[in-house]
Image 1 (cartoon, rainbow, N blue to C red):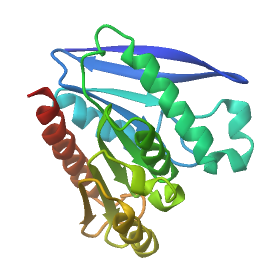
Image 2: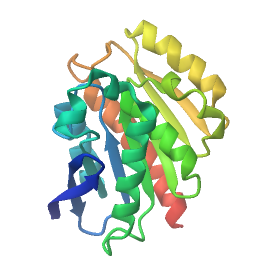
Image 3: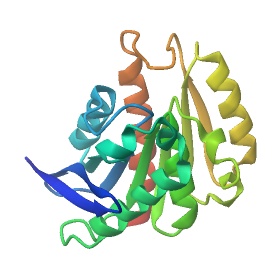
Amino acid sequence: MSVSTIIELEVSGGHIFGDLTVPDHAIGLVIFAHGSGSSRNSPRNKTIAALLQQAGMATFLMDLLTDREDDDFANRFNIDLLSGRLLLATMELKKRPELHHLPIGYFGASTGAAAALHASAWLPELIRAVVSRGGRPDLAQTFLPEVKSPTLLIVGELDEEVLALNRQALSMLHSEKALTTVKGASHLFEEEGTLGQAGILARDWFLDHFKSALS
């Protein structure tokens, strides 16, 4: 059984919202950062969140921008702004009694992966793992050498341009790291079974690092 709650966060210029789901006896919390043009209602992120919940992880799928901010296309690539929202959410969730004891991880897609890595560099002792799906870690390249969190980069085999960018980013990371390709997958993992494979890879990465944090 799990409990779901909509959380409102006050930001300059308005409010953003997130969907928190906490299963019984949760072993960790994963905060999601969606990609450009998406939202907390991303069907792909919801699919992966459900898989993580089944494995005993709490999840938080959040909007990174207000509606007005999202109307300005440049904001979707403003990694400083996006990572700041992740940091805000992390600090607010950490205050909640049902979550304060849990290890925390970030899951980022596309530009959200850059925001996740940027934010994790600011919280090296708190963020226990980062997973990027079809991400653009190169957009946070200034901060990549400062990332301490174990980081998994998942890229579709057919997403050649992003795969090349992820290989470059991998060389700049000095934390525990891995790059895994999903066979037959393109950028959005729309091919049958590929999103599920990405979800399993993410689940196992978080499980390994959450368990070590709790031991």
